[in-house]
Length: 252
Length: 171
View 1 (cartoon, chains in turn blue, green):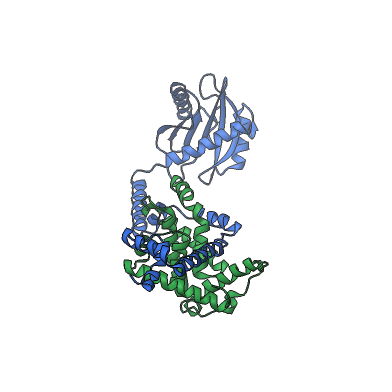
View 2 (cartoon, rainbow over the protein chains, first blue to last red):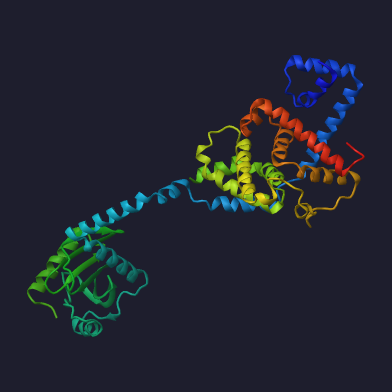
């Protein structure tokens, strides 16, 4: 190679990109040609200068926090892609329609009433707001409740052996004011919610919600939801005895 | 997903300086560079599933590059042709005024660099700072292998000329 030709390779040489034959040639020329050596030194200095000048560009201290905040706000890919799919909305509409249709065919109002009744019951226990009118006597409790409700709840003083009336309160269930009768047996507290079946009659059901046993039933006068921690047997005894008294008219 | 985010932060966040440096060299202004880095990191996280291991630094740098190019295209009036823009090259308040002769030369060097076309600035920083090989440059910049060397030579020549214009007595 001629001198100028080799000079042309000087940067590739410094970049370490020459094959071994070219590299040997450059190194040979380096030994022979002083002007090539000084050019090489010049180019090396130039590179060092480039690195020094550009290395001064560093991310400002606040950038990391900014980037981190921005990155952490990025919704996960899954949720982004899912909600960007048009079909998800169609699917949701279909699913909703199916649910509504099923609900019309197989009403499960009991569950929602039961859930709310449990909430009222557990609240009354935890806030010691057990009753608003305290008396074992239906004659005292009934007028108090009737004055605050749009109906007259059936009042049974002692619905089953060992149970006595503690009193009553007014609760809200499904946007409706209901009468809550509270009974006690030793340490067991029973809340019996009742209201007229103006819209729908509850069917008979039993379930456990948050450790409470919940029973629903109804007759022509009232929907009932019973919440307690009684055993199933004690609960059934209570309900049977209560029904007998209601049917026999043994209530106020 | 949290795990993936943590992995992303661990792999990609350490390259913030490199990402900023590249963005800063491509779009020149500090605030624009910061915006580009932020956008690039968001894009990177969204596409992190497609990152199949390997060189996280090179990966984020290419996302920064693409983001910067999109930005430059949008602001092409003053960037694509790269006429010298006084407003851009006014020393900003945060920039320390050069004190020593060495500092002054560094400053002039950066000014000269800023006058180069964007593809020269880009290939120089990837070669000199990131140390990419010609092969890596060719594949990342989608250039035929022979073009890398000639573009680098032209970029270096151009830079030397710009420096000579600013500083006639040296280099």
